[in-house]
Length: 322
Ligand SMILES: Cc1cc2nc3c(=O)[nH]c(=O)nc-3n(C[C@H](O)[C@H](O)[C@H](O)COP(=O)(O)OP(=O)(O)OC[C@H]3O[C@@H](n4cnc5c(N)ncnc54)[C@H](O)[C@@H]3O)c2cc1C
Ligand code: SF4
Image (tube, rainbow, N blue to C red; front, side, top):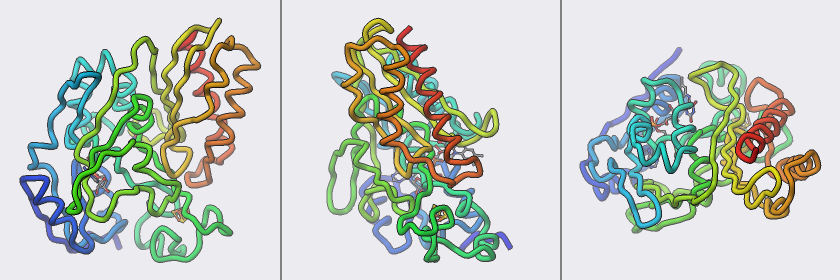
């Protein structure tokens, strides 16, 4: 039987109130609710307190900074898509936002909710009844991983589309908890553990994201999904390219859907100065293979998702450099 657990809902008006409420045992934040509520409805998650963020004005603004933008965690995807500055100077972010869910999701879904999205797996995003009948797994109550039975770590995939695009722009995450505030590289907000993929402290709130402009780079985001729309990525690739096919000057590439965290590729400097030819693409594939690790967490084979990641990368490199 599908069920909605009993929980209390709190409606703080300030960040300070929210983080005090979130420190309680079993508390979770609710932003647009487009993922959280769908999960709760299926019996995925059993919070005792739901801390609704939608009345906190401080989370809702987008403002220009000296070298980029400061985006509140409560800004909706629709607001991102309606912002001309973002569409012009951070087009990879609007490219990614446009592919998230459907237009109705985008009216409610927020930047914070997308960046803090729980990981996904075909053995976890199922009803409570289904999971009970098929044995729970490491991510919830169980002691085995059905994807990698010998493994000790959950391999559920991070599938948020915004994170790779933000990572190209050297995003920093502003975090607040009752312990105080801190700012970290967005990449440090994630770790390779599908059952615990965010490094946030208990009750810590993502308040805003700071991103820096990329001068002279061409950027784009591509994703492949099972259905043509309203679907999570099998793999999503964000790329920023400086130079031409005759001389690559700098490449930045980041992935979603392939690991339990978004991955910003390292080691791409060895491609600088090279022509974009078959050899360079082979070098790029080698770098990519060492760092991405799709698993059988969705019903398409992991080898297929790896191919998807490679092909999207090749297409983007050709489009942006040629
Ligand atoms: C049919 C369908 C299709 C979808 N397709 C996609 C897709 O293609 N791509 C994609 O990326 N997503 C997709 N989603 C998931 C979801 O709609 C989006 O990721 C959305 O951006 C989540 O934002 P939200 O504000 O609704 O988050 P919520 O559902 O409110 O929250 C998501 C998680 O983030 C936490 N959280 C929210 N805000 C904060 C904060 N400020 N600080 C700390 N933690 C926070 C919540 O506690 C929760 O764990 C889809 C969902 C559905 C139902
Ligand atoms: S990867 Fe394994 S442990 Fe994680 S949700 Fe899937 S089956 Fe469960």
